[in-house]
Image (cartoon, rainbow, N blue to C red; front, side, top):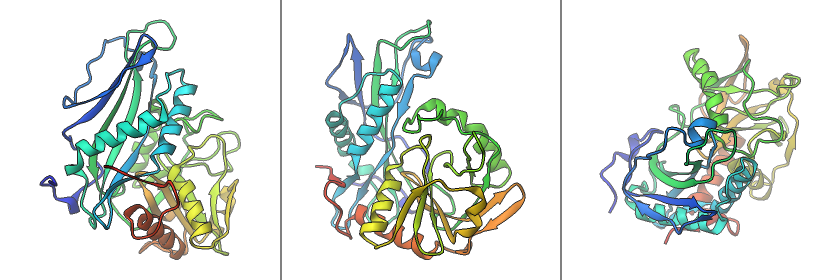
Length: 340
């Protein structure tokens, strides 16, 4: 039975659900894991996560489809990305199949919180891992917790499908070159000052540039970029220091194989931003959020698509991807995982 929630008014915030998943790593091995009701995490004051920020996380969503099934979108890719993050951070790998099964159990246990079809909302799923035992020397922890919690959410940006205004930021991104695959808590914490500063000045997000030359577009604090040029080519920035967004990669496939559009992953320079006719942010939370204006230190770069609605190509991309997720459009093999 669905919970008594005003699904239409959901924002993007935490709402406690009934169950969460917990697996512990001790003596060199993970236990079987279990569902628990307690939402509190109790740690030693010298826990590795608190002292040396040894943590990483993922984000994915569960949806109710048009035929009333509960599904997740490409959870295997989230599992692989977490493996990549853990390997870099000297954390024990959580097996991909166990990851998918833990997601299934957690969503199934909280299925009453999965918004019904047609409300534009979803159940956000947050798998995360952290060093849990006391560490005082600079070294990896010996014990870890892998957890998953869920929360029902609405649109990430308050404007919904309306275009947003962003700025080119003077702040550098946190991710070191070559580590863009990591969804580490430290990288996100390092971007908090920049995003608060942007919000205080009336901007929805930051556009980060490469730290070496400050001439090339990278990403925002929590999403990748997609641009549409005047020939309707879908362009996304190429860099080895940005997060390889699962949503972005899926949209590039959709553009080519569903919409018959040309796609390019290449370096995107600031001085060509005014040549694009559409711009959007893409990620699990943002999905595909249109950008109407990019503020370059007081100079406004206005997208020809305007501030009233999504651009023509962005809208087609969005509708096709959401259709795949919600079951109104046939998905490529392996993209949709049903929760049973």
